[in-house]
Amino acid sequence: MIATGNDEYGEVLAQRIGQFIIDADKNSGRSKQRAIGPSEVGEPCERQLSYKILDWPETNTNRDPIAAIIGTGFHMWMADQFEARQTPMPDGQPRYRIEERVTVRQGHTPDSTLTGSSDLYDRLAMLNNDWKLVGKSSHNKYRTQGPGHKYRVQAHLYGLGQENAGHRPARVAVTFIGRHHELMVHVWSEPYDRQIALDALARLDRIRDTAAGLELDQHPEHWARIPIPEKPNCRFCPWLKPGSTDLSQGCPGKPSTTPGASLEALIA
Image 1 (cartoon, rainbow, N blue to C red):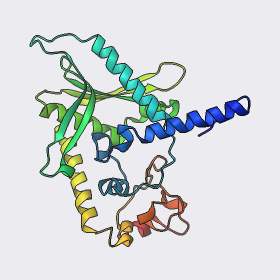
Image 2 (spheres, helix red, strand yellow; image 1 turned 90 degrees about the vertical axis):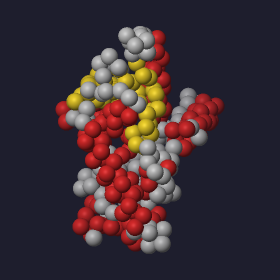
Image 3 (cartoon, rainbow, N blue to C red; image 1 turned 120 degrees about the vertical axis):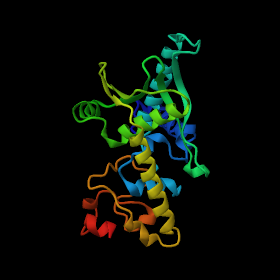
Image 4 (tube, helix red, strand yellow; image 1 turned 60 degrees about the vertical axis):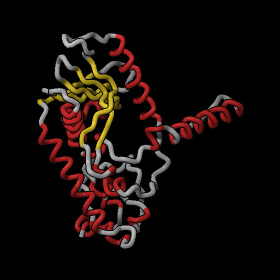
């Protein structure tokens, strides 16, 4: 947090307001969510998913919340605008399903059930759309390189959720909106493919079974057997702990940040 003021009073007030924002975010429903949601299933890092599945104590607790808070506000604004423009379909039901909960999978146990809130489903276009408010560099990356595996999986999982709700999604989309001083909109879209969602769920189950089988609470040394990608995105990982040599206490992140350690050594 960076808090400044034009005098001593302003500096103190800036610190208090900044801390208020941080504390309020920590107590929000989004921050307290413990179950894995559709936005996390496609995470490339199996170690991060394992920490999440096991509800492992977080170590990177000083993450800046402002981007997520702004994103939440934007989602609320978009929901209001589509609600104001709601129109009926021939069956008398609304065209738009806005911020509605969907069940991607109803499991036999609570931890195998997957639900989430879909940003927008357009029944006329048979399209599920997800809003992403991103920085300028990220916007350029998604525009030139595609949405990445994680967001692609999320899109098809929500497609499956809509299918389970009795709809017939034809396409899924992720709309990237630049968080900048000028409006930048990029839409990635492709035909809905149920198999992409099913494959992602099967991978999640495999990771869950592996984590349970390793008995990590009793054998913390087994964390090293859970791999991380060659190029992990560690910056916002809740379990990042630079320099950590005990994976049960946090992950050091990219292998190159651990002197003398190679990826092969980390996953042996």
